[in-house]
Length: 526
Picture 1 (cartoon, helix red, strand yellow):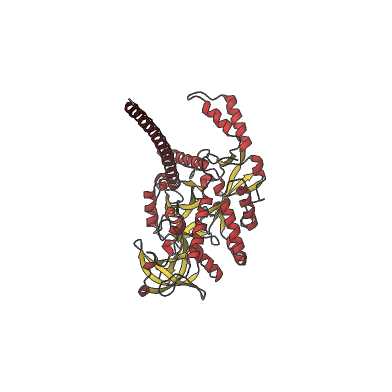
Picture 2: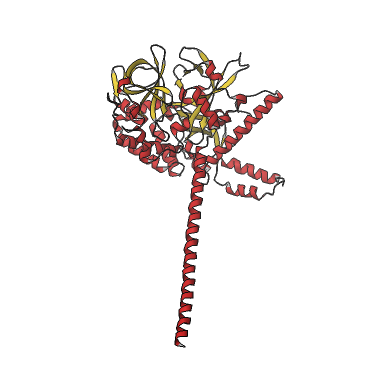
């Protein structure tokens, strides 16, 4: 009897223990499963954001002119009313009037000018005109969704132009006056915007003033429209470079230009032959960088002209002569024609890559990098034993003399920090591509030695001739301008820069790219 009870008790203990173990296992499994789903969801969201960043989105500078700028403050209620409206339901005229009045209250002004930084090939400011004052606003302060809406309107405008062509009703330009543009938006109230730094006229001297830049940066940083780490980085750089401040300010004053000023500039080749005229500039919405110039060529008295897309990196801007230099022929432009004015085709990377190849330029999205490598990965391509630096062959060293025709950027490896590239026309008339060194390092060393590496300067290059990406290139060891020599590598090809120099440039480039990206959709409002 006792033995029977003992077996019975053991059976129930085992059964209860099994139930407890099963319950704990199910709980742990559920927790890990839920966590795994969360991680998977986060990964998918991250991948979607990366794909969205990597997508090429181009905006016409010409189309952005006169576009309304509107505050997003006070708009959620209007948007909710619109969502509550049933499909097919006619809009109440009274409600439409209320919406129009609300929009008027939230209108901040109109885009009067786009100011570019020629040193970095980026949008410095979008100047908004409001009540007779002019407000310079950084590109990255704008709401990204509104930029996407503007791009969609551009696509609709392109279709409208194509329809007009088919009907024979004519065209009025690249988009101005075609239809009302979708407004750009700022996450700031109208009252706050009136307190933003402003100037009395769109004057390059005022816009180049470092104190204005600091006030604009502080204003939009304090309101969460610009990332704070970039401002702190800029302050640290200013403290570290006090000795070079005056020279840098002089360079900054000549680096800015108004987009409207270069419209209709003549495009010439290096044989002083007129090739085309500047029609428009295309801006990459993600980074705020100049991607392409649209140029018109051919025809007679404007009739029968074609429009070609030219990578901005292939052009050299001469504001003194009011011309743009391009190492190309009319045959090259013919190969880069944009049919039916449809510049949105350039958002197709395969098509855009073919355009870049026509002008022997690297695709801008690879040079500037939408998602750059982080930390040491961004600088490894510049280290002494990298695959790129191994292409320097001491037995292939040569010297050339000529004129700098273009100063641009390149990437020794996808995701790497940028390098400085020169296009030099030799005395024999040959066009030679020269790779200098890491862009920021090369610029700083040139400033320190008072060496002017700008378009039109006579230059002597010493370096190793090699092939990179199936193109002939000279990797420079020395660059001499007016008896002043910038030494980048020794005779064996060993770089003069240190690892600390590379890490500093990599950090600055990543922060600059994060800062240049407009406010993302879903950013929490103040």
